[in-house]
Length: 128
Image 1 (cartoon, one colour):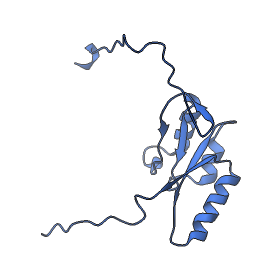
Image 2 (image 1 turned 120 degrees about the vertical axis):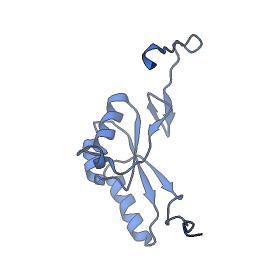
Image 3 (image 1 turned 180 degrees about the vertical axis):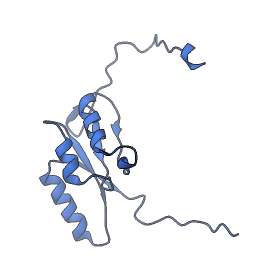
Image 4 (image 1 turned 90 degrees about the horizontal axis):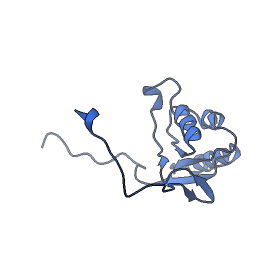
């Protein structure tokens, strides 16, 4: 039964886990990764991730495939909250350029160029 399991750290006490990333200090050495489909779990979708990140002073790296718009995510941000934006380079780079310019206008402070999912992966045939 899990209720009986207790973790008592005697080695790591009074340790600050804050970290600085690109000049901004956060309360933890991790961030909320870009993840889409938030509205499958809740009607407010990824906006709740932004709100949770603000509450706990953690970076929210916003997914450009989020179920909320770039504007909605920026509007969910509190004053002085830092958000980063994820970028997928589109075949038409002018689309990507426009997305980046809009993110800058909306106050996103950092970017991640994602290169692992530019095209659908090759799937092996199930009929082999």
